[in-house]
Image (cartoon, rainbow, N blue to C red):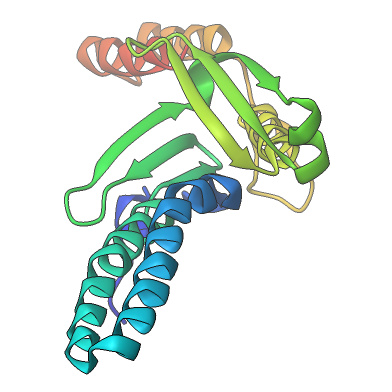
Amino acid sequence: MAKTYIQSMLGENERVLLVTRQHWFVLFSAITAEILITLVIIVGVSVATLYDPRAAFGFILVLLPIISALRDILIWNNHEYLVTNRRVIQISGIFNKNVVDSSLEKVNDVKMNQSFFGRMFDYGDVEILTASEIGVNLFKRIGDPVKFKTVMLNAKEKLGYSESGPHTQRTESIPAQIAELDELRKKGIVTEAEFQNKKKELLAKM
């Protein structure tokens, strides 16, 4: 079976924990104008046909707002926010995809803002502060922001645990792993080049 676009982006042992989109209010506000225009055209043409049957050709104009509304729906449907066990990913675009992701290891802080209506209808803004070059990722008016934030923080916490056994155990700290590698280097078990390469990989994760 062919992979989906999301599946094609996942690394080895990476899995999706949550997929969400902007709240349906965002979609509704985007297509409200198209709905009103469609109704106006239908009513206007229907009245005009009472006086001149040839006015029925005006119904063709309904295709314009309908096509525009379908485009807005596709844009909304293809704008996704994902949390995996390693990253937070934002995907947008129907044909040309724009992907922005942040490693959970580099997430420094998470802020959530919900207005009164946001709490009533379950939407809000989630701002992710990272140590990457992007700095800040702002996810506006996403659905169920509390769950999004909770899943992301839980995934970040589990990054320090090993999933090899039935009960997760905290893995060694990076400085401890480097010290252990240094001992192996001194004993001649690993070469100087191997030690430096592995040390560089571990430091990059801090």
